[in-house]
Image (tube, rainbow, N blue to C red):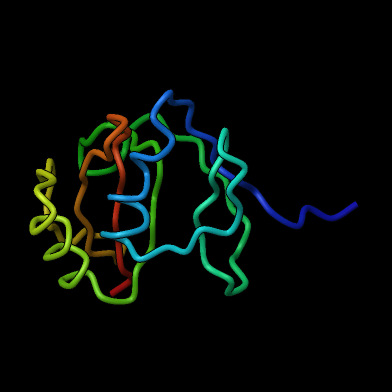
Length: 116
């Protein structure tokens, strides 16, 4: 048996609200839409990872999601332009990432990062 994919599932009564953050701000594509569930992502192959933590590093809370991007400054600009408040960072971390935290429309803490 080989794991092929891991999907984060976020419970909400406002499925359409995901478009503003995950579609418009982060630029993810709708991969599946059944009305009661909408999956955003990229058609590129992704690595499979799941993390377990007692803190988010540098004394921060554990984020609900971590999203790696190719241009952190562009992501930061899009987040701010869309009116989402940055809760941490941007910060250069000692383990080799630059990142910031923001809450999505559902209150989930999202760690947006780039490897240095």
